[in-house]
Image (cartoon, rainbow, N blue to C red; front, side):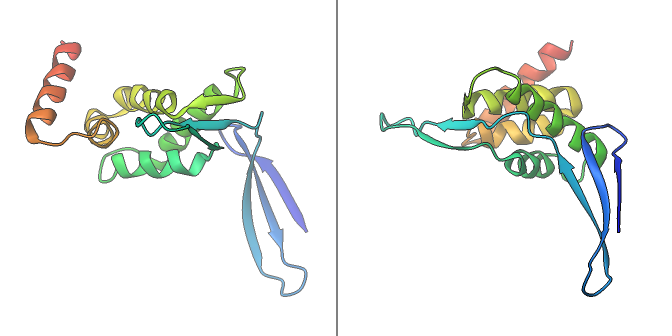
Amino acid sequence: MKDSRPTEDNTSIRRRRQCESCGARFTTFERVQLREVLVVKNKGDGSEPRREPFDRTKIEQSVALACRKRPVTQERLDQLVTGIQRQIETMGDGEVASKVIGEMVMDALRQLDSVAYIRFASVYRDFSEARDFEEFASSIQEVAK
């Protein structure tokens, strides 16, 4: 037995299924993948860049960590990640630099929550001391004015 319907934001299909052997019911969510995309990662040491398949869960985990204990709903996080994924898949290129993805996440978090934005930036931009936080936070305040 199977019951299928689109989710509220129409970005995936929700399916209720039942195991044929034990009768247990469970839900799956299926997303449409527009194209296969490879992420190009540079170490910055002049070595050959690595390529790996785009993995949505990496963005989900990073964004969830940045938004931890913030007033941001899971639905809003899913919308943010889906928006970034759609941008990547519709860029027209089979490869995208990890730096481009990082900047997309930064832009999306800037609009969503300033604390989450600073948290993500501190890891993404590799802040090493308190002064880095201060300079970054003051640059955000200047833009907001």
